[in-house]
Length: 509
Image 1 (tube, one colour):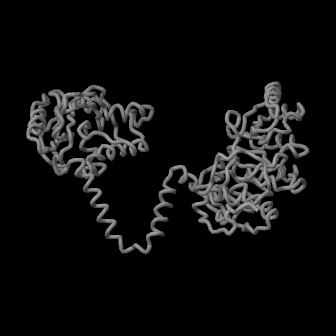
Image 2: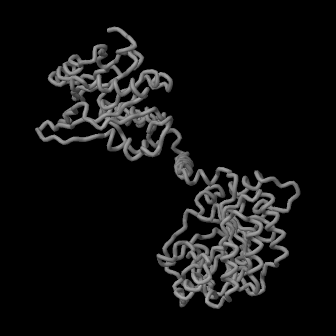
Image 3: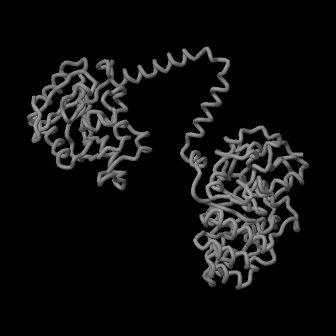
């Protein structure tokens, strides 16, 4: 056993089992390797015992061809890799055999688009859902030392743990060895996978018993665990992370509507004609200020309602929105009822100022073929809102808690309106529910209160962009009124009966 530059020392850890025939076979296969510089370490998962620069871990039901280590070393030395994954043949003890490839099939091939320093690596999210066979991995010892991976505590998860550190990895498609599968009568040795898993379960059981004295706190602990599991979702955590832009901002031209959908989250079916009609001067003042305090970093700007086409003159709003936000996507959201009545100037303006006309395709009588033809005639962009161009429009029901007893943080991270910012009368709101709750209160005599902390005055002197982006990424006190986790979807579309049960869990009157 010696180390040299041409043939670096390879440490082979051999985990022996209870079957002497298998033990002899794996030792013979290692001892008969053509590679000249090998040390064998038996029955140990402590990689500190390795003196070599490279490590191979074999179990008693493995068998390697004479040139296996020579071939693996060639791959490592030529490309300066950290890990080489290779394929194994699987032979059933009954005599049936089938070729398999934990490494190649499950790891490298689907992820070759990713790269670090020119080498493919494995997506960490994918690694959390897969296992690799321990004996089909060849490792560089320096990499293990650098990432403190010198002791294998859980063999069935070790390769996954290694790949989470994004080593320079290569997968060999050729079959470099044999893995024999036989009925599991008992643990092959103390480090057998099943034995290790059972040890994990026993540890968890003992740990749970030690916490049994906290039984009276079981409900708060259960709720804490559930809340943490909810927040662990990557998409939810993104909601709480301040960004350097506003993804979507909606502005009402009018609050009332001519369609009156059930459970409208904008409460447009409860608003009346004349309640609100945006003036062009106010729009210009607010839109200029929004551009200044965000430095123009609004990705989607929506001219909304109510039904915006009920406004007597929408063209100046379309023009000024584009002149102010030159790079943003600007959408004109409408139910489409009045689109067939629009004059050519409407469609020409949409084309000239690159306004995306986004009608929602409700199950009502609208000549969509004529609308599409007119849009094409004037080369105006037409895109049905929310995918309703190819699927049936349905409703969702997100109930309100009129007593305000919900957890604001959990309501915020579970809310589908998170990120749907509304600019209303010079103030930014997290969602349309908070912005237009006054119509719900007026209709049903409720008192869902807004506080100064529930919105942000964009005309505040000295307001900085980071303050705006921080505001839209955190819960507000009003979130205590929303039962986001009780949201149900897929309800057939219908018009409102203006009953409080459409927005709450209270019974119909």
